[in-house]
Length: 366
Image (cartoon, rainbow, N blue to C red; front, side, top):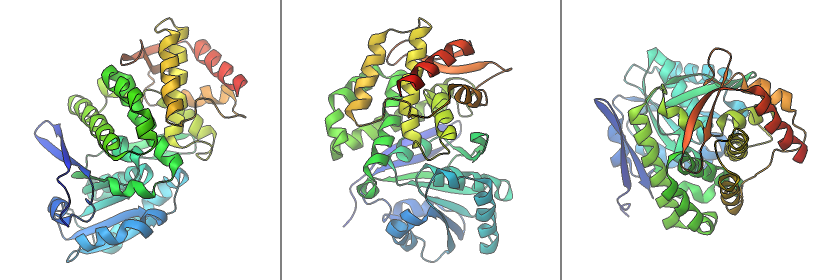
């Protein structure tokens, strides 16, 4: 059966662009994505869970090429330099030349690490994103951010390296655990919270449908979020200004993830809690009112996302981790805050006393 025509969103970057395809049956639609491979070598980088479900579909489309696979164990803890080294060794064993392609089949961990390995091999080869989680479809697969974690913090090492294409096959979401699906919704909500109040209102009206994985609502939400992000990336590819707004909730969220050893919270869960902490800090600084925080709280709860810091976290440790955030300048905290739903902005020179007060309150409430 020929797949239905997918949504196609182009990410335009100066004189170059790449497509994001969103629809059903796309992994098996090799006639569409195979044309984005320019050479005869391909390395499929995936994890053990995803590969057991979907590697065969991709392999069928690679027939005739010299290809191999490299599989990670599942989980954020495996987005490491050690695994980048192993991926590069796999490319060496493959004999990958400069026209080779890395195919990232999996969620954000796989996509980030595969993209970084592709950026490093022979100073940069092609890669294709095939996201299999909602979070990766709406966020990490689009925009060319790649990287790995260090014990000191998340994504501290990386490169901007744009994919040749993004193949978002929503059939893969059928096997996505409920918790990971909900974590992806956090990134959808984040996009609306940053700069699209009408989309936020749409999400409020369709929260029940999204929580129930209604196909029509899901495809619409993915397409709207990707379209919004594609516009931001086109205007600010390397995050010199506007693109930093896409990090709403991330400075708090990454600190929570790191302090929890990447096991207490999924990335999307950290973003959900982080957005609320950013909203509370915005309140404290007189930038926004409590009604906007309450609105965000209700929407996150409606789709089943966490709205509180887990028990056992130390506010001082979280603040120390926040000081390592890549957005900071000259020893000063630089956070993404808001003036209400759809009105995020970059705020420099944030007083650590205010941040610590928000963290203290959140930890005491845990």
